[in-house]
Image (cartoon, rainbow, N blue to C red; front, side, top):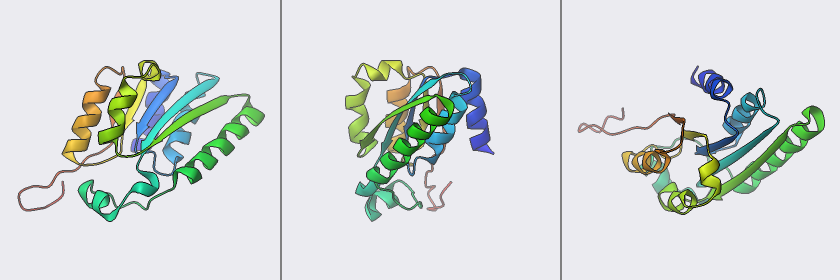
Length: 160
């Protein structure tokens, strides 16, 4: 399963700062952090998603079929996870979330100091060619970049 492979990659490469586009409900972020905690006592997660700003139009454009989550719900989940890890394992999970379309939000983030600390990225937000090109271009200097998925439409409109 691809998510077991993702955890294996994190344990192997030992990143401390993980960036993910397409945070969705935060579950994958928690799985990646748990894998990261095998090698570190602190993991910082940076996530991008449309969250509640997603629309029928963006779902269609990005080939999304998943339900939408609110940023507030994901923040609550991450805060509870961070508290649990601190209390039970003495591990530190920190996070920052950005709401919006990565076509607009990534450019500003790439210019920040925190971006230079990212040592692992998971591309998993929009599935359109345009969005994946923007993400790939933004991440080209990150040491480890995993591309989760993307789709295109062939001339017969079949999704591949």
